[in-house]
Image (cartoon, rainbow, N blue to C red; front, side, top):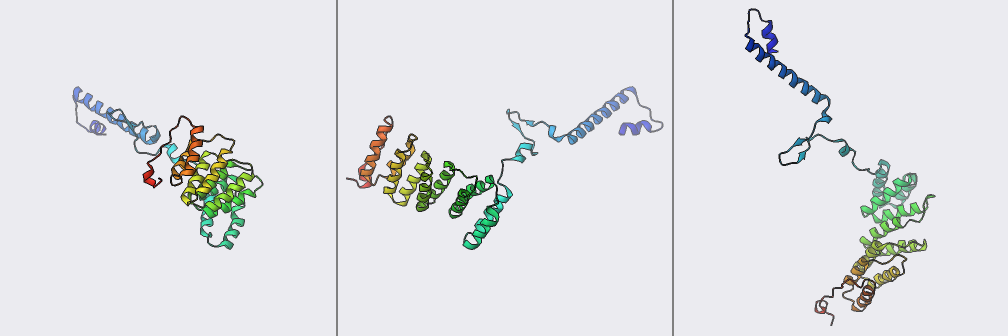
Length: 257
C-alpha cells in the first residue's frame, strides 16, 4: 500500500536500488496476507505445533472425534430413570408411571434403564424393571442380566433379594460365572452368614464350568474365624490347584488354639 501511494505521488523519483527494496517488501506483504486468508478459510488443515523435545501439541481447537464421544443413554431412558426415582416412595404413582412410560420403551432402552439403576444402586427400582423385562415378548433367559442384578444386590448386602433372583436363575437352568459366585460368597460373609456362603460354594462345585481361584481365596479369607469350614475349603483348593499356595496366618491372631 505504501509503495502504491508513493508511486502515484507527483514529482517523486526513486533510484533503482530503492525501487527493488520497495518491490520486495510489497511482495512479502502480499504473501503474508494470502497465507492468513488461507488459514482462516481452512482452520482444520493447520498442523499441530512441534516442540523441540520431540512431542506434538494440539493447537487448542476441538477435533471432530472428541465431540462425538461415546454413545450415551437415550433421552427417553433418562426421562424414565428420573421418573422412577421421583416416584419410588409412592407405589401407586410408580406403578402408573411404569405402565405409561416403561412398557413402551424399546428393548435396548429398557435394558439401559436397568443397567443404570444397578449402577446407581437403586436396587428396588432395578428389581421392578427386571420383572418388567421378564414379561416382555422378546425376553429370553440371559445369564448376564441375572449376573449384573445379582452382583448389584450382593454388593448392597440385599442377600434375601439376591437369593430370590438366584433361585429364579437356577430354575431357568442358568449357571453363574466365577465372578458372580465370588460376589455372592463375599456378600454372605459380610452379612455374617458363613453357612449360606458354604451353600453357594457347594453350588459352585456342581457348576459345569471349571471353578476358578478367586471364590476360593475369598472363602479362605472370610472363614478364618471358622477353622473347620476353612480346612474343608482349603483341602478342596489344594486338590484343584496343587501348584497354588495357601497362606495360613498365626492362630494366635484369631484366638484359634
